[in-house]
Every structure is written in C-alpha cells, then in structure tokens.
Length: 160
Image (cartoon, rainbow, N blue to C red; front, side, top):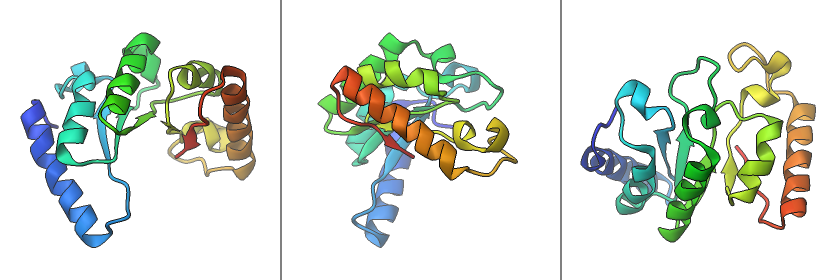
C-alpha cells in the first residue's frame, strides 16, 4: 500500500530489521507490483532502489490483483529487463512473478532473472487457490527453466 518511495523504504526497513533480528541468515525480499497503477502503489522501477536502501536482499515484481492478468500484461519484457538491471546494479537478487507460465521462461531467462515465482503453474488444474502444488509440475517447470538457461547461457533462475 505504499504510494511513495519514502514510505516503501520506511516499511521495508522495519521488515528487514524484524526478520534479521530474528533470523539473520534469512533472505528478505521487497515485493512490489507490476500492476501498481491499478492499486495506486509505488512505480515498479523504484522498487530496486527501495529494497537496496532498506537493506533487503532481493527485489520482486508480482501482480497485486489476481484476475488472470499476467506480469507481461502490465510490464513489458524490456521494462522487466530494466528492473533486473537496476536490482543487480544495487547488489540485489531480481525476482519476477505474476501468473508466470512455462512460455515466459525464455524471456525471463534472457533478461537475467534470478528467481521466478510461480504458484498456479505448478498447481493441480492450474488453480492457484484450490489446487495443490504438484511435484511433477514443479519438476517439469524446473526442467524447462534449466533448458532455457542452457540455451541462453545465463545463470539458472530459482523456483519459489
């Protein structure tokens, strides 16, 4: 719900402090929304700077409104690439999510995404709410990620 970078930094500093005080080795991910324009949140490209200034370990773009629209419906691949570049320039891991499908793995790999967040794609029937995570779907998704990484000679993204 943060509408300014300053609010985002303040909130994330509190989150980072709380997590790291309890479990210093835990990775803290500052998450923002590709569809920020729909809910009045901070610009997605501001997130890497917010995350870095707050002491987070990663910056992630996801979708806020789960209505079937996807990451690339709101933020095109070239903007996602800029997000990844900014995260890496700030020393952060870059995570992208938002109804990601197997077909998205090529573009996500090519832009250097470190972490690809999925849920529905690895759930029974593709149902992110009622479907249970299926190990064989996770394995298939990971195999495709590995194939894309080999094909594009970039580091292998992680599944979250």
